[in-house]
Structure formats: structure tokens, C-alpha cells
Amino acid sequence: MKEKIKILLADDEKDLAKAVATILTYSNYNVDVVNNGKEAIEKINNKIYDLIILDIMMPVMDGIQVLKELRKNNIKTPVILLTAKSQVDDKVEGLDSGANDYLTKPFDKKELLARIRALTRIKEENEEKYEVGNIVFDKETSVLSSKKASLHLNNKECEIMEILVKNQERNISKKELKNRIWVNEKNDDNIVTMYISYLQEKFSALGANMKISYKNGYVLEKL
Image 1 (tube, rainbow, N blue to C red):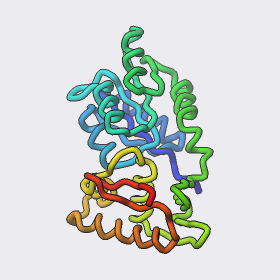
Image 2 (image 1 turned 180 degrees about the vertical axis):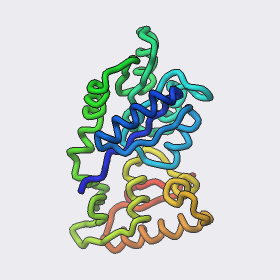
Image 3 (image 1 turned 30 degrees about the vertical axis):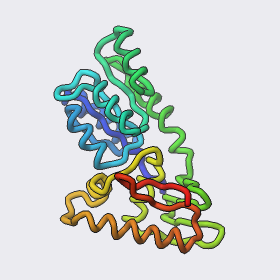
């Protein structure tokens, strides 16, 4: 069974956010809802989403500020901006800041769902296989393989691999890995080091031409 598409919805209009979340849940999406930009950043730093929907006008941090922060950190998750304004300048600023699409309130639910399908179609059609050098990570089966052999990853190893292969442009800190994978678990940073070493051993056993390096954070690179 395919994993549900994960969406973060950030909108300070709580009634609207609740209504949109209900529509998305009914449409078989996995939805988290926050009501300001700061909460959106916190969620994104602790969980991987397939799509982010940001209202431009939010307290603490507005949608454009959140978007700029994501793109500055090389988080390339597709983003739809919501705005109650119809001015061209808002749309241009949003697109120039890295938004993939926008919708002007009020919007029709059919249009929202169509925009979401368009931006998540690649994931829905993808078999969730990632080639990294001479190894292949199959998220659906939790298998790491090469021409030499195939090895099964446990849940934590699989989550670390997913983060690393989806964020090859930036270094992932121990804190970020810990916050994303060991949520609400009382472990020190050594737990991250330990699981990275497990993955390194599997890379070696597979004869991988890749390694997990540490340069102010973890990153995949060629040997």
C-alpha cells in the first residue's frame, strides 16, 4: 500500500484551516495544521512533507518569510501560497521567492485539489526508489541494494536514508536528525552517531562508492 502524501497547512484563519484539512483528509491526504509561520518552521524542521500550503498573511512569520527561510535552507518541498489579496505584486513576490503555485481566497476545493495533484504527481507515480552512486534505496521495501547484495534497513535507518537522499544539497545536523526521527524520545546525540555507523557498515558491505560524511552536518558524498 502506498504511503499517503503528507501535507502541512499553515493558515491563521482557524475555521478555514479546519475546513481545508477536512477536505484534504477526506481526499486521502495526511494533513498537519498550524496557525502561524513560526509553528510551520518548527513542523518542517521535525518532519518531511511532500507539499506545504502557506497563507501569506500570518502572525509571527508570514508565508513569504517562511518560504524564503525554506529555500535558504535548500528545502525544495513544493509550496502553494494562499492569499486574500488579488494584487499582482503579492503573486510575483511569492513566485520569485520560490513558490510553486498560488491560490487567491476564496478558492474552490476542486481547484485546490487539482493544484495539489499537479504538484505531487511525481511522488504518486514514483516507486520511491532513489539511486545514490552505485546503490539503490527502496523506501517502500526498506531495502538498500547494489549489484553485490541487498540489505534490509530498520525503521530508523530507513528514515535517516530518506532524509539524506532528499537533502543531498545541504548538511543535516545531528540535532535535526534527532528532532525529526526521535521525536519526544529521551536520547542524546550519540543515538544519531550510532545509527549513522550502522548505515556506514551497510554501505561498506554493499561495496558502495558513497559514504556519509560529517561537515557541520551529515551529507552523502562519493568516496
